[in-house]
Length: 435
Image (cartoon, rainbow, N blue to C red; front, top):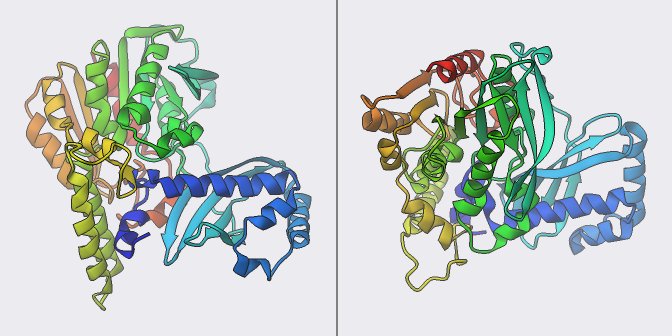
């Protein structure tokens, strides 16, 4: 990876995490643990770079794995959940659930995408349900969301004993994501679903297609395949939920999902409204540009080294403003994403699309959000202020994951458990129920 793209690659939850090399690394990290779990230690050993093979043997791996499983039991699930760049290396976090405990792993790859390190970091805080959630007030049903030829695990959450209740379809942000929107120990989509259910509102959340069908995203694609098709399928499913008011279905999009919510509303015009949570009002290029600048500012580098890297990165970023194919092929990569993706997003104006809608719109923004800044919220307000049915809510303390924080901080903040703001859930539920 070019050094000029270092900062872009470090952006957490940016769409750049779809780059083909990241998907390959996820696959390789998962395969490495499959070998260990199946006790194919010779195959696991082959995953290491030649420089590391002299330092260990397959028997070493066998002994290590035996000690791990002796202490925490056999693995139940092992999934790569996050990737980042550290110098010349790619670092992949693998989330592990074992019979007796949860344990994450860190797998380090070199530029050749061979394993050069394998570690067990100390377990950090684990998820706990919000204090405002009473599990006696709702029921969950595990189902499969069918979207064309795809099948995605989903959960329908409904208020217990209720009838004629509103439904909310929860749409993820960028990058591969499970149905809870899990980031570290945080599960913002689960918090929202459970919190709304306690207040008499149902919901549907589902695994993002990029997790289950990752191989499909190694070629040309757009947000249609990434987000839209499955969101439309989820809305159709919401209409079949027993007790649901089919005339009161909403789409809540987070981050990229919020950016695309107006577009989803044009595809399913009979939904009641859309909720834009931490939604960009500008092009993705502008968002990534601001994120890069913020990262450099936060680093307080006095040598000027990062500033030079930033300048190069911003120059590379400008290449992503492409709006038509020209001589390029749809699957040609620009900053790790196919040209088809950039063209699709750059020709979409979410603000203009929202202005034309005749539906209810609820826009949520946090003052401690360093991924989608205040700039975008003000653009939404400027464009939609005075429009009938539009409500704006700004929470000075919440971050991009919609949880209260003391400061903006950086991505390390996401490794500490913090539930979605109670006030946000309460006021959102009140808005949904207001006719």
